Amino acid sequence: MDFNEIRQKLVKIILRMQVSETFARRSSLLQGLPDVALQRDEGLAQHDLNEIVDGLNKLGRLTRDGGMRPVIVVVNNALSYAPEGSEIADDLQEVKALLEDYYGGDTQPRLAEDTARATSEALIFGIPRDARVDFAFIDHAHLIARSIARLTVPRIVNGEPDGQAAYGTGWIIAPGILITNHHVIEARDGQTAAPTDFQAQAEQVTADFDYHTETGATLQCQGSRLLAWSRELDYAVIELGQAEKIADRQPIPVVPAPSELHRGARVNIVQHPKGGPLRFAIRNNFFVRPSPRPAFLLYQTDTEPGASGSPACNDDWQVVALHHASVQVPAELVPQNALDGQLMKVTVLNEAVRIHEILDDLPPELKQRILQAATTAPR
Image (tube, rainbow, N blue to C red; front, top):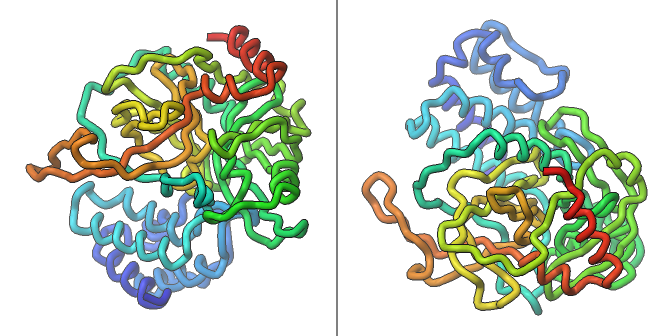
């Protein structure tokens, strides 16, 4: 479907909503977007909406180094006015999917073919359970958020940037040191980067902290040094070249020994889905089972592309694993539940690398730096 058809479909849907009735209400669909010159029409709603959508489509992404498409922001704003589960909400979600398909989505690398039985991230319906938490949980969640960054990795091929970039998530594991996935730094779509290109990409990573809204200010660190990596365990540890900028941010504590997780234990993931603003997955998020591969574990927690490299935490906000992908599994291995009286067949789980396996794979000096940070981090 071309953009004009998608635009017509979107405008027809919004015209069915009260938000289209006045110029001021239509202007609220631009919430969260920068001020841009649009050829607006105060009198004719249909013409005004067409001008809004066409004008925003010409902007590209919200920032030069990534961010959401402005038209998708408009759809999200429209969704905030649509009753959940209504026909209009469903229609808007359909248009949003069409837009994401049209734009092609964010570039999110997959694991190389020789290691990946994992695919891209997946949205999974969790099991309805008591999701109440105490104040300390939220207080620590705010602290954790300060130590998580959206990563932008420039893709370098044969020593030269090709203009493409991959997005992922990274977090402070020791003072001035970030960890993420190997495949995030590799920045390839199922391919393998040459060692020199991989090294160069690691050195040119941009880390945006405090990326909470599309247009808000962030604390940006550029340049890094690759300290350790593993394709098999899918991790990369980098030291930021501008570490002084984050000197006041605490490393996220890790669980250094094998952790015994019972079925249904919480697996909280803080992530930058699709290279966008920070999001918390803290509701339907349950450990399911160990992976057939001993170094990995499986769980039901919602993620999307861009979440790769996120910390997978227990309810004490200690990292138990490094999130990296999703895997297809037989339906009988996944807790199934009903929605509106119908059984959903879920055949995918998200997967993470156990953090103690990564620690044991690191050079002894680097492992010691991380463990020292874990014991001194305030709780």
